[in-house]
Image (tube, rainbow, N blue to C red; front, side):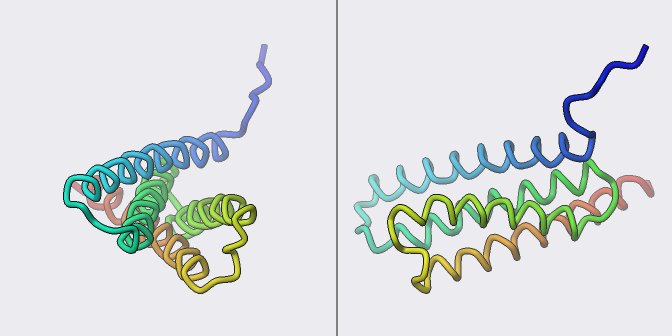
Length: 131
C-alpha cells in the first residue's frame, strides 16, 4: 500500500536547504557579534556584517538545493534567494525600514547570492558526477 507523503520531494529539498541556510546565517551572525564585541566595533559596522552573514546563508541554501535536486540550479538558487528576501521583508515590516536603501540592497544581495549558490551547486554536482 502506498502511504501519502506530507510534502513532495522537491518541497522537502527546498525546505531542508532553507533550514540549513538559516543555521548558517545564525552561526554567521553569532560569529559577527562575537567579532564586534571582541574588537570593540561600533554599531555602524553591524549592517554590512549582517548582510554578509545572511548572504552566506542564502548562498549555502541555494548550493544545497541545487546539489540535492541535481537539476535547474539557477531556479533552485533563485527560489532560495527569494525565500530569504521574503523572510527579510517579514522581519523589516515591524521596524518600518522596508523602504530604505540598505534593505532594498540586501534583497538584491540575497537573491544574487542564492542564484550564485544554485549555479555553484550544479557545477559542483557536474564535476563530481564526471569523475
